[in-house]
Image 1 (cartoon, rainbow, N blue to C red):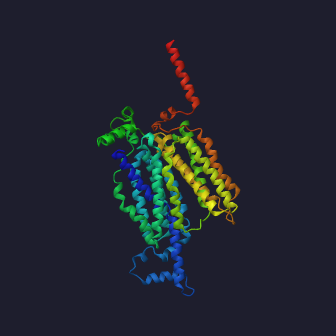
Image 2 (image 1 turned 180 degrees about the horizontal axis):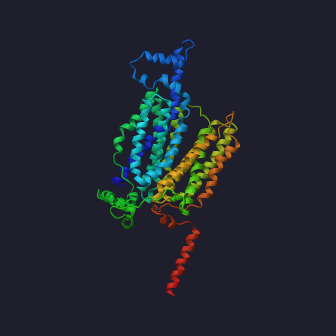
Image 3 (image 1 turned 45 degrees about the vertical axis):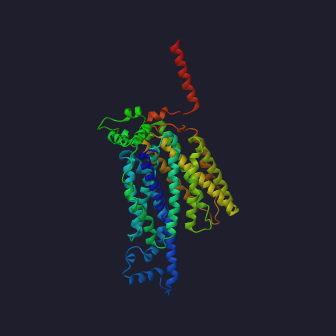
Length: 491
């Protein structure tokens, strides 16, 4: 790997390691507040005085405690009804990020959007230690969701665009592995933080300390070429021989000369409705949107409706991240994008149905948990494959915009999964089981309409998408026409 590639990957790995710190914050805040309030109820014991009122009096007597002036146990106990909306508001932020992130990235570059969102996210992690109103806390959670979505989309695209075609299996799973490590680290830090202030400081300070490390992230060479920024591209090539060979390999020397616009000019970004006007882009966008929504519905249907595993929230979160760590071995399986997508979709749908069916009829809990972990892992593998497939299917001029629309479908699937709660007996309805399991299986048929992109260069224009092979029949027709043309010329 060249120095430029190493510079990209270790910074993106750091950004993905910190993402779970605020992604799962609502789970930890609810647990911490419940522990604080239960401890206050047990220790106050002051007649009929409410626990919150007694805690207010105790904290008001200690005027030297600076934490009691901002967010302390006396105030967060009254936040309990509001905290239940934290995850929903965060998901709303992810939806908004899907809408605006792609447009901003296509216009201003992935690097700039990533840097801005990383800084805003780090500040949002620290703000809950200072604010005193639950409504402001929910607003901060919404902004955090927007930044988290933009960081994820830009990181995946940058990692893939800085990778040669033969190694594109690795970036998405590598970043996913960093996310699982961050999940385990966040659970450990939250377990060591018994109070509201300590929880948010322990999850926010590491991100603030590491902000200077993001100071310089190389931009995508394809985007720079399309925007006419030839000076930056030549600066990348003049760094070292390895960097020059890397950029030439990613762009292609002849292709690079043809793509770079004249000095001072650039390709204007297409209109917002452009992805919906071209049949090839529209077909790919529709299929990938459905596959993302079906995968999200299956994944969160398992996670939200299977029930508790009999351990505390910190242990559950730690083992949840640990179960996703084997994703680093996925690139060792030499399969192309389309067959691997079909395999993982069918496995996730089948295992989802079996796990929910076993939980409905109260089978052995160990057997149910085993199916849950297998189904969750299959769904996670599908997410990684689709993330890579998204980048390879859409042209550079509208790539981030299309990826954001696909990501929007994924977030809608997350929200829809909450519409099927367990019944009073804790079991899942048959209709929910069929929806969770049938969505990915139907998606296997849609995969047949997509081209194979493994080992192919990334498309930069719609014409490049049309030149990609669609099916063996079309290949045969083209070959037959070429042979007939040769025969005609020889005659």
